[in-house]
Image (tube, rainbow, N blue to C red; front, side, top):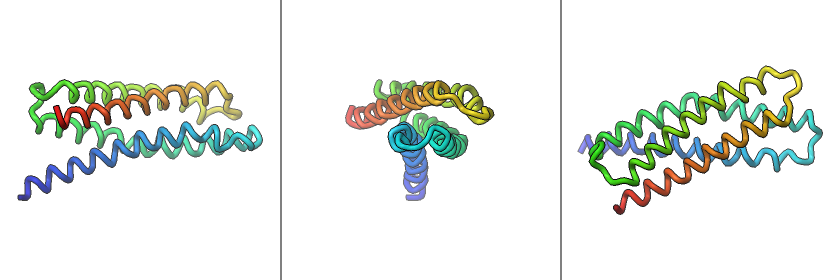
Length: 148
């Protein structure tokens, strides 16, 4: 009984982490449309604040998602599980790499810039879009793997 509660808690932590990661990416991508009518300086400030909060939270969410994912992967059989779970794990690894590359690359340049340039926002948004697409593919693979 207690073991099923424990594994359910690990799964809930994993799902909440992924929901924030992918959902925050979708919200971050919508910021360009949301702030379209603002002045460029206001637009940059709002986008930067939203992106800063998203990445600060991701610094905690990504490790939780990866650790709980590995625990669930091992619990479900490790290497011997069906192929969609392996694709899901690959997507997770690529998402984590993209997060690190974005966080330590264009996002740090954005934070340090006196006047953030639009190309830095574009570079960050492209990588966030890639993370979001990979997250959606991983979710689809998790659903497919459940029935495989």
